[in-house]
Amino acid sequence: MVIGFPDLTSRRYNITSPKDPRYNCIAWAAGDVTKWWWPTPGVSYWPERVPSEETVEAFTAAFATLGYEPCSNGGFEDGFEKLAIYAQVNGAPSHMARQLPGGRWTSKLGSDVDIMHEALTQVEGSLYGHVVAYMKRRRS
Image (cartoon, rainbow, N blue to C red; front, side, top):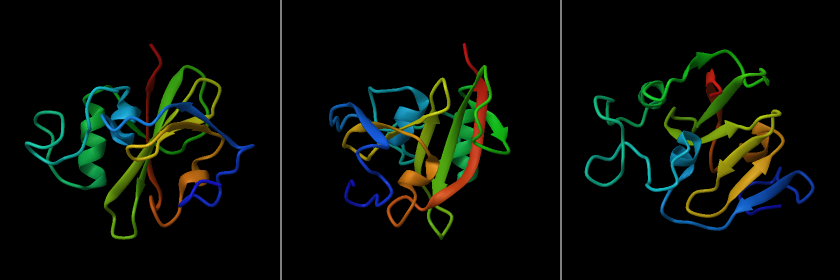
């Protein structure tokens, strides 16, 4: 088990890259390992013309700039890459995960390691809240 993630056990996740504070889970979901993504003007990267707000709508708009569109679930669909947006009880986004070919998921745990995990529920809980939205785009 990883502290803060009671549903992660060694048999159900793998560390896929070392700790790297240059990027966060939002950047990782976007495929960017060069900068920290967050809607904080002047501090973090955020796509132009997207509201600098900590809302699911703003995060959805940010990923729409990368070709993602909202979808109804995180189930595997051959030919598509999916994202899951997590939010706290107050509705503020807190984490994102990206689906890998074959259906497993990948997450960046803050400024720590990247992991591959079987289910979205494995990183739900007090730190990241719960999945509240899904997006998808065709795999290139």
